[in-house]
Length: 175
View 1 (cartoon, rainbow, N blue to C red):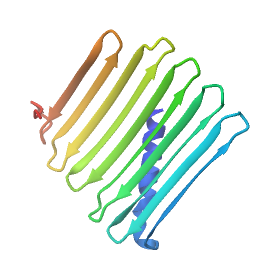
View 2 (view 1 turned 90 degrees about the vertical axis):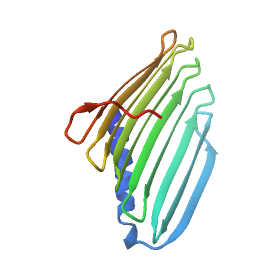
View 3 (view 1 turned 120 degrees about the horizontal axis):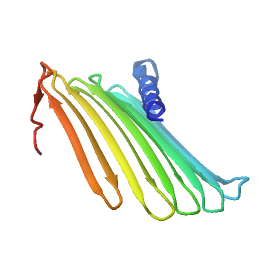
């Protein structure tokens, strides 16, 4: 699942990487309609392409009229100096109150790169679990790898490791 979200985000970023080949401009579209399941299907998309980069984003959802719904979104950008990034996510909600969400994103630029992935779920009784993992690499070789988890009744826990350009574990900077 994590891999499919990050791959979707990367594909969106690659679609923007050829921004110099296309025309400059802005486009947007949106719509909604009743669907055969008795609910609504809706979505929107926006994109911009210019000499300094561009972006594309889309989102949508569908419901069934019974209290169930699914949705998702994705977006990507490319900046004037080669920076690029993308994110994608999806969610679902069931009539019994349970819900799920997952998302991921990637960034790459002159100062380094980063990737993050997270998910959260809630059962029908309201019990929630969530995780988020993030890794980043700086332009000078330092790196960060961290994970945060939450569970109803237990609270939040976090672990993270920072390394210098030689791969030695170092103290992570504080805010």
